[in-house]
Image (cartoon, rainbow, N blue to C red):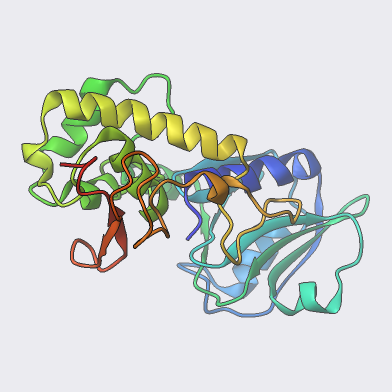
Length: 274
């Protein structure tokens, strides 16, 4: 599932092509990805609207229109893409939303499995939506103390708490595995039993890994593509994720894997993460 680095990369990829442009026509092939808005209302809001900005909040892309926030959650297989040419047949097959732009080009939300969601929010709706999310991990104003306070009150496993978007946003399974490895923390340890010095390491490692993944334009195993259609490369730098049964690159211990923490694969080193 696209996490903070992937969505940030997609947003950066499409922003230069969209900001200041007017949407001439929008089409939607399926309605099962809509949340809280009908097809006619969405298409009416998009058609004729000017894109004022494109940003990211948590794992969501946000297209700022004249009177609305158009929120796109990529889910498992969603991509925000810009094309300056006609789409090929394979590209058009999974283009759920297509928005033709004044002056040429097309903004596309592509979703192979249609697990993503689209929302249209007015200012009041956006404030409520935003308020339900935790702080951004790369926000310069976020301190180690606030980071720890947001997680340490939970009795859940630290990995699960780290992925709770109400506590801290943007971190999913890939980067939780990696951050906990570098911080030397057992991912199954209850969050309220993690020591302050361990939280200090986790804070810095989470930020470092997310920033490095953005520099690498995200992690691609199968479906994820940048806003210009290219794969990311951070998968080449992963230390534990997708490496169950392989030797730890630090100590040589065979990496273990479990689905017991949150039903998703957790890969860790028994020696490095005591």
